[in-house]
Length: 253
Length: 253
Image (cartoon, rainbow over all chains, first blue to last red; front, side):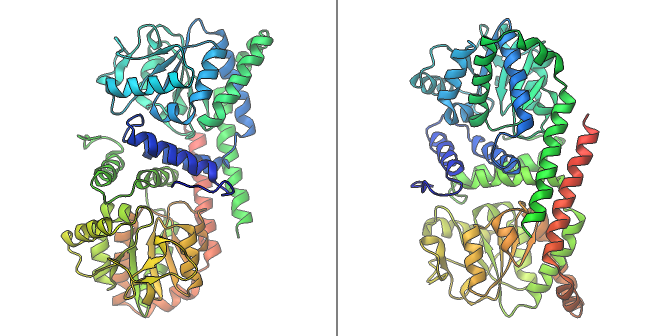
């Protein structure tokens, strides 16, 4: 998977595969990370590997939640950290909100440290989640651990590629959860306060841009939050995929 | 991912993930294998993780192609070998047709041997593809290598999770290609003589059953092959997914 030609029609996708594989070998991405990445690839394929129009409003609403939070946190796992470190740091600075390393599979302090160091190498100054001391209520095992100055204290948490049980537990704890999940039918996407059905590498820069625009025009947040209809948001995404399949069906014959 | 509870609603899927991971660590599954497996998981999720009705006919037609071949071969890669060794051996015995180890990524003789030994441990007697000496015309690199007594000599080749370029090259070589590919829009699925849009672990036993039935009723093959309409077959699969998304959209709200 090395030496990917720049003119390959799916060069970006192949490069991301190589990145996931490289950092899996270096211990930043969990053993389960490549399979999760593959699932995302398939759903992204259905979207046409682009940020679809109806998701732009969801991103604006998510930005309004982040800007209006008392305390927001960006929760990152290995896959997200290695695929979009600069975008995570820029978003963190723009909100501003700390990044919390919060991995699901293969949680060890060594892996937390590696991910945190990787983010710091890309400019992150405020990385939480190393040796976390708090626990999400009603969740068991290492996956319940969160930082007392991060997720535990936050009212709005941005997650990506998140486990369904943990999303549910964060909501039950009273947090608002913004998820970035390419599977619009996953438990996380269905349960989250708002789901952004887009690839993290595209969604994060769009989210940062929306945050900057809201800082310049703070009065716009209220209208965005007031108008958001979660059911309508999800239905628009599913209808988009249905219509795209119809178009592909008619064109590939 | 160990200790998966038997009553977990998606226990089978989680066990397959663990299998892919285990055999990746043992060198049978390529580094790219888990990502490919994840893509399959996502498409299978859209099918409802079951063999959908319209695919049953495709399986019967594929069985007719195999039974009527002058020489058919079952081409296997690491993922398929470790997920369905017994089913591969049973199908191989029922047709009868040899199994050819024919991997795409990370092709080394050591890996070919490991996969062949794994299949022999599960009862395979006729495993080809070790130190293959022939090449698929117009394909470059190690991925062109095929066995002179297997794919090179065959008129019908069964492949799963196959690369699009290689499928195209096999067709250009005059072979009929039966693919098992969960992505109905992949180049392999679109180009193959017939695609079975189903998970290998479900499709292979169904295919073996269809082969046994055709051996008992050989006159049925001609009608199956005559009636097959590739465009209709693919459209039925895509329509099924579209309708399933519509149903999910109406029920999850």
